[in-house]
Structure formats: C-alpha cells, structure tokens
Length: 151
Image 1 (cartoon, rainbow, N blue to C red):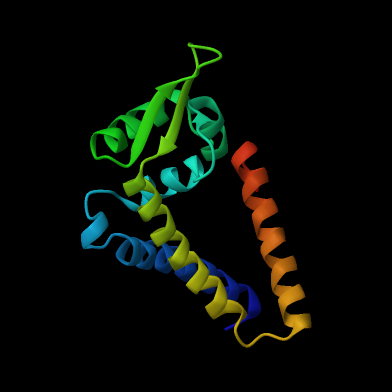
Image 2: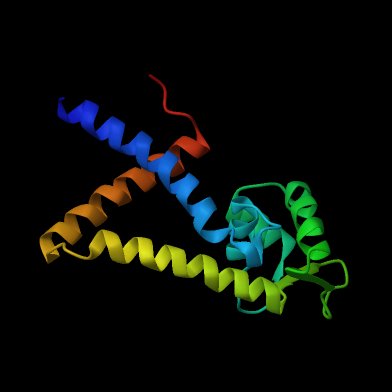
C-alpha cells in the first residue's frame, strides 16, 4: 500500500473510530440521556461564565435556531441553565448546571486520555511533526468548511 492509500485509510478509519469510541466512552449510565453531539455543545458552552447563544452557535458553526433546539433539550434534561442578561434583556445567556459540569469533565477526561495515548511515546521531533501535520489537516477542514475545495 502506498503512502497516499495508507494516509487515506488511516484518516477515514480514525474519524469513524473516534466518533464511535467517543460516543461509547462518554455516554455512560450517568449520561445516557444525551448524545455525543450534545456533549460537544456542553463543551462549547464551557465551564466559565455564562455565554450568549450567538457566541456558542458561532463557535459550533451552527445557526442560533439550531442551537436553540439542542439547548431546549439540554435544559429539560438538566444539563444547561438559560437566563436573560442583566445588562441587555434581549440577550439569552446559557451556562452549565452542576450536572452539565459533571458531563463536561467526564468528556474532558476522555479527550485527555486520547491525547496522552497519542503523545505517550513520541520524542520532541515526532511531537512537532505530528502537531504540524494535524495543523495542516485542521487548516484544510476550516478552509473546506468555508468553501469546498474544487477538484
């Protein structure tokens, strides 16, 4: 198998496996009522101060309307708290409830384990090479998301 075929197979397999394994790892008996996508929304909301719906939607590259549907479900399930801004009543702020924070840290633990497993036996040069390659891949995805690459 040539380099192109090997890289293609690895990337395709990795994306599939990460999504599948992450779903199994983070959706435990404590968090069985939410999806992996919900976990990523909780991650975008974050554990710091309350954030506006528009800021979170922008971070996720989705519309506020799409986020509103997801947030409504997460509020009903007790993961997110919604409140109006004290300074501008038109602005809706969202933050994680204590249950949402537990889910956030559970998800973070999976990511920490994944990164540690990747970096575990790499020397500094390999770490730099991996980081450079992943940055190129990230740049491709960001550009592709803005305007599909023409063939």
